[in-house]
Amino acid sequence: MRVPRLRAPGLLVAGALGLAVVVACTAAGPSLAGFDPAHVATADRLLPPGTAGHHLGTDGLGRDVMARTLAGFRWSLAVALLALVIGGAVGTVVGVAAGWHEGWPRAVLSRAIETAIAFPALVLALAVIAAAGHGFWALVLVLGLVNWVGFARVVLAETRSIKRREYVLAARLLGLGDARVILGPVLRALRPTLLVVSAFAFADLLVAEASLSFLGIGAPLGTPSWGGMLADSRQYVFTAPWLLYAPAAAVVLAVLTANLLGDGLTQLWGGGGRAE
Image (cartoon, rainbow, N blue to C red; front, side):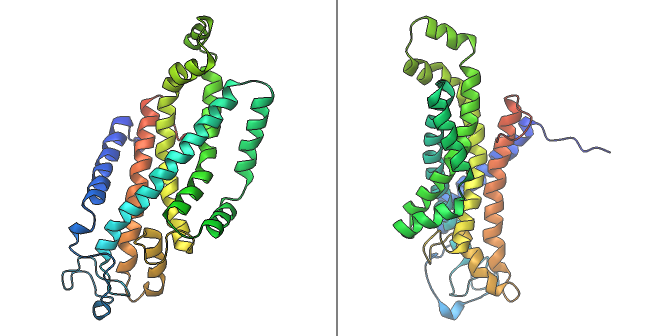
């Protein structure tokens, strides 16, 4: 018996529920746990969940796991959102320029996009962090520079299609300049595509941020980052497995929410699958 796929309204409702949970965790932050995420209490190290008021236990330095996981929402979501803005802005500008103009401008910009796709993202991350050092803005810059390519590819293809639509041709025949046409009907037509791509890109950025922090080249040491917490939990997988559960669940919740919203918007606006 075939299980029916969840349709757009169901996906959007599920995504909205997940978004509500993410927003609540981000807004409330560590106050829900009642502990300072940076407070070190070596006497309380590796307490199991439910002990001494620590609902999810403590880590190897006695810090409350729940407080650090909730604080990770603010760090990871802020990094991903700002990187999304940078990557989306750069990618949209490059994609529109390449899709709108013919001849050598399109050829040059297309080659730039292909070169960026081929360039190893980890090498770029290491180069930027080596120059700028660990920190919030270095991580945002790295992820933003990696993320713009996906936007550029999709926007380039969409702009080439939109350029041939009747209302765009009519606007150009009325004497409107390229800037007014692009900032008006073209960007309005791109809005659904940009929303869908942004949802999926946000999920990818969350995973990328957690991965870089897990490798030790993302968040600074001691920052309540999900990737850093997962890295710290490796040495306690068998003795204190609760250190792994909370940050892993937070990553899954945030990424799943973004993907549900992206899939729902894709189906709602006529796309059958994930935008690439």
